[in-house]
Length: 288
Image (cartoon, rainbow, N blue to C red; front, side):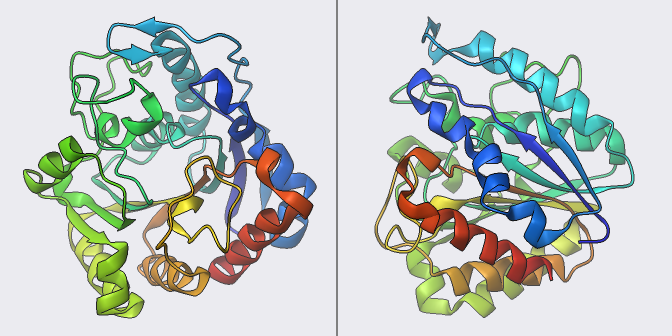
């Protein structure tokens, strides 16, 4: 990891999900930095704790999300000439990270999104108002009237530069949204049928051909909960750790990956740090 820097983004947007906000600290304590030896560790973005939920329109805790996103945006914007390993809380860190890196790098970013869930709702379609279930759609600019905490910076992602891998729990509105989007979608079942190597090749080639630089988002619940159970939404039928590593390693092989986001680990659900150790070993496998 000679050319990678480490950054924590401990955001969570429901008060009951504080455990995910503790993930960067827990992964460091489990030995992530010691094992990976990044070029630099920039610590964590100082995000205030969310202690009480508030519904704002059709979203929950929008003001908190906006404030946290602005902080993440500023920190990642300052990371010029570095590749970032971002230890997130929940998936919503990606809005600030991607906007900040777009400011720093310019060009057309691509995204490989590994997740059991779509995160492709908008406030009008979300069944819960949970921003963590909307964040990929927000990063793609699908809620243009929403203040995302990134000033006048437009969301950087475009659907033709998005590949989603590993889904197995999409909400009906997300299915409609993906079907009407130019994004490519490989469900967990398709990964099993096609083989991880073929999916990895197709995803990497698609993004390499269309993108100036690429982000890789790993929600660890894409891995089957029998292997990494310490998540808020364990969903059976997930990828193996090996399948996940094959997909990420092929993407890194393009030479265009500027950020790897590792999110949704919940240390309060991790007995004996088993999940943390497996996440660290996965990171070591893909980054060595």
